[in-house]
Image (cartoon, rainbow, N blue to C red; front, top):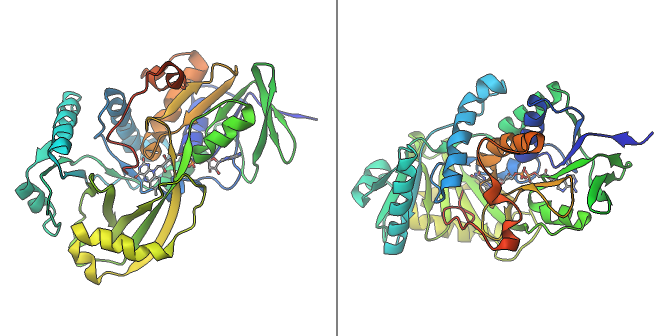
Length: 383
Ligand SMILES: Cc1cc2nc3c(=O)[nH]c(=O)nc-3n(C[C@H](O)[C@H](O)[C@H](O)COP(=O)(O)OP(=O)(O)OC[C@H]3O[C@@H](n4cnc5c(N)ncnc54)[C@H](O)[C@@H]3O)c2cc1C
């Protein structure tokens, strides 16, 4: 007998798992989530886990504020410890234009109650004494930003979704989208079709390919970014804020008493997730510009993941008008871990009631046709 579902979600990263949970929580039944690999094995499991309120658009700030509340509630709601560490986020500015951007952002963020402030170089030095501040003009700092554990959070959502009746199939790749005219009818997989009136593309960096399967254009492209970690460092005993050298698109944070530092980001789009060990020397050289204390440190581990980049570095959320029943939840462009929880909640509301408690219509895929894109200068590949 053919398999059927009410809603099929493609992809079990943070977005798919949060969506599955929130759909079930809000009363949906017959939800099936398909994952080609294992839960959280995509970009989510490879992310730096950063969570911040320091965005440049009102909508992203509002999404972050609600996401922050959700991270705080996770021990009770998901019965997992998300290891949410509010160590702060420190954005370093190197040019007058960057300072001006940060000033504008800080004013906007403060209007929403974000406890963010601009710091002069002496204040940055007090916060992180071992940071080399050559060419740095100032910074934006928010002490309630931080990072959490992507695996624990995603598995928490997956476990709760299962408890609420969601079926999760791992190692089951979607190989085709079934459609009848301008209506979606389900998905094809290696082990047979699943007929469903609603299908959600939550395939992360693969969202463009899944769009192709459905015959619709989903403008999400994969870009590899590498991360490396060092062994313990005495200076990191007091954990530093997640620090971003905005000008150089480079960042670091604490990790198990050592340093997690960003490596190169590929300029060409690729699905390659191998670590390029030849780049370690270059990455360390980059790191030494701001962190001379790393001169004696050893790189212990490294991994790579894919950013899922949309044309305006903002998420693509909502229905795809030309294919009834087909939705996209992705394209977060490097901030999908932190916005994954709220994305799932709002997408579930939208799918089940037609509206959402935060208006996300500005993030609809339609914007690429109408030209109403929303540029977000505080994302584009920053943690
Ligand atoms: C190095 C790095 C650091 C990052 N740091 C941060 C950070 O600090 N903070 C932050 O918020 N974000 C960060 N990100 C971005 C973040 O990881 C992503 O935005 C987020 O994980 C996207 O979640 P997702 O669920 O959409 O995608 P994914 O986690 O990739 O999940 C999509 C899933 O879909 C599956 N899939 C794809 N195609 C199919 C198919 N045909 N059939 C079935 N399944 C399929 C994939 O296997 C995958 O598991 C970082 C990313 C990278 C690469």
